[in-house]
Image (cartoon, rainbow, N blue to C red):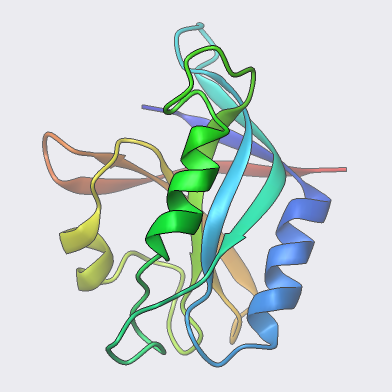
Length: 147
């Protein structure tokens, strides 16, 4: 589990700009480089890859990533291609009318032990969490936005 994440400012600004214009939950991935096995236990995100929300429920409070787009991102990273120099760092999504904390839907659907970023446009705040699959819990971690 990561203790902290460092993300380039342009990644966060691009996501916020997109989410601010959409009344629904928007979603995607942040890619970059993981150092999970090192003493620093940190992830560096430098690219945003958006994925369409295809939820058939209330998209203001729910997202379902378009499967083919999601798999395309995963295939480009070490998540599937172990030879790739690009790692899947985080899943990112917005809570257009809520707070940047995992919702009950987020908790029930979380599948992977990676970083989850949640942006709340109404209060202009992004929070980072790791997910512990074994205990089925989210833990807030430190996020640094870097120029």
